[in-house]
Amino acid sequence: MNTTKLEMLCKVPEVTLIFWIIKILATTLGETGGDAVSMSMNLGYLIGTAIFAVIFIVAVTIQIRAKKFNPALYWATIIATTTVGTTLADFADRSLGIGYAGGTVLLLTLLMASLYVWHRTMGSVAVDTVNSPKSEAFYWVTIMFSQTLGTALGDWTADTAGLGYTGGALVFGTMLAIIAVAYYRTKISHTVLFWAAFILTRPLGAVVGDFLDKPIAKGGLELSRYSASLTLLALIVVCIFMFSHKAAAKRH
Image (cartoon, rainbow, N blue to C red):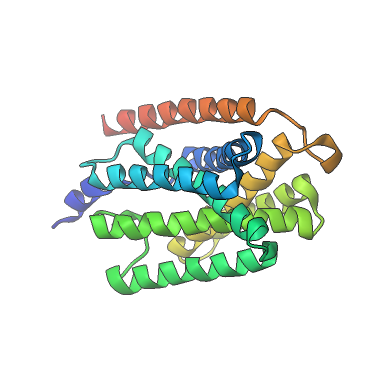
């Protein structure tokens, strides 16, 4: 199969600035949305995880069965991974009592194992090779682990390390800026840099989400989780429209 046909089969978006903006908004929504279900609705982390796990499985199944790239479906699946990641990490860290450090180490191990098995099976973990059901399955499992890891890492940085939400956001924002510079100024593998940035956007979203909805006494703005989630969702929809419009204009 030639390169053009493979590119047509690829069901992940082009990695542009808009991609990263939507990704950060989606990870922030995952934090506020996950907390809205598990905390504001008082359903708890286990039930919240079960609800979002079902949504995640359904979304991934539809995404894999889709014949072509659909931006709304893709980003809905990303949001599903980040919400289940939020409640799953909170369940492991708090309900199981392994703590943020234990949760971070466990999830980092699972993420590295996922990338290793994916590479051994498919020969590459580059996103532009995601053009078959098997590679898509690896892609979404890896993303789910990265989203869950990001929640644990964000909470660990903000709470245990004592940096607070703004301090945590500054740390992860700076690390992402360094990766961006490395992308354009060094010969480091772009695939490695992509996954590093993809992973780091999640703890950034986690601390920003906590900053929006946590009590003022704990360093947050104490906004409603529901209104914050709806606002983030609206911004994502606007960005997806811009993303789709730009992609359509580029094709023509």
